[in-house]
Length: 370
Image (cartoon, rainbow, N blue to C red; front, top):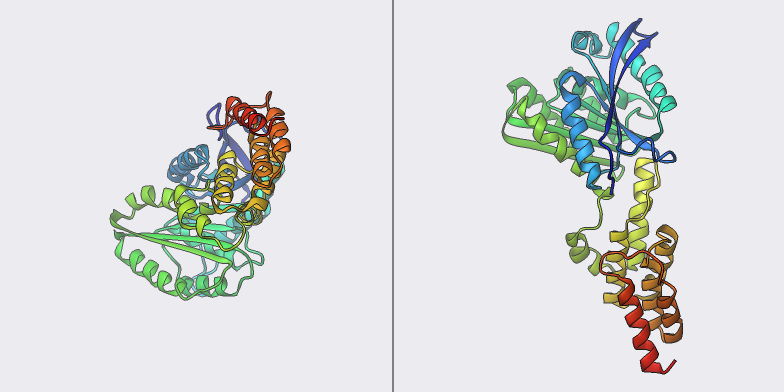
């Protein structure tokens, strides 16, 4: 779990060659960014940062604090006076033109390379836009590969043909894409109608590499839906990242037909594949899988969990405890006793205490006369 100082917020004046002007950026770095010098972080790129930055950055900080999503670098683009020009599109082909084309190139050719150069970034970018900018960010879907891995589209004011273009692009791309779309029952009528049309098109896409989520918030307006949609989107998009829950344990893990250790490895491999960074296997996830291995009498899985715990958390009692349990269950009590005793100077974890390990060692000694 992330602890320590609060997130750092930095303001930057970025001199853009493409735009021939200076743009103001607002950047939130994760807690302990300066201390964790080897760690890399996904980017959350926020359009309309004049009013969207704080709700996005606050939710990212909150969810990452509780390990519900990875820590991330939040980059906001202030667009108060330039918004209409930034999203400008041609009235015949409905693609970026003039200032809109310049802004499109500014994001891909200047801003993202600048962030990658100056901060420790992972190769995952989630873009967030509302209304006009929620339309604009879709143009990056038409690139190969798309610039963004995730799209958080809040009540989008879509250009003509965009609803079909988005669905067509997603149906053809081989890349993993996360797409979240939100409207509300009290949304602006024209925007709500075209959003629902896009939703109907998106429902026809049935591809493993496309992760699509949709919310229609009852009673929410064009503006109030933003506060509901951001946490909902983060929960959906980063669901694989969350720690193993009791529901996961009861409904999935205990009913697996394959070894439970494979479930754990698949979870963390998927995190690396989707978000572009490796993360330490959590202590609680190790305990959950080890508990399931014991309950299902999967002793090979238990041994593998013990070895993983020793590698990921070498200063704790986790590896010793579960390796001792493996030796006990597979008929090697002397090895179990010595393994428990060897953990005397290690750190306790949850219910696994030094006294507990020494008690198990003493019981083996008494039972077998060692």
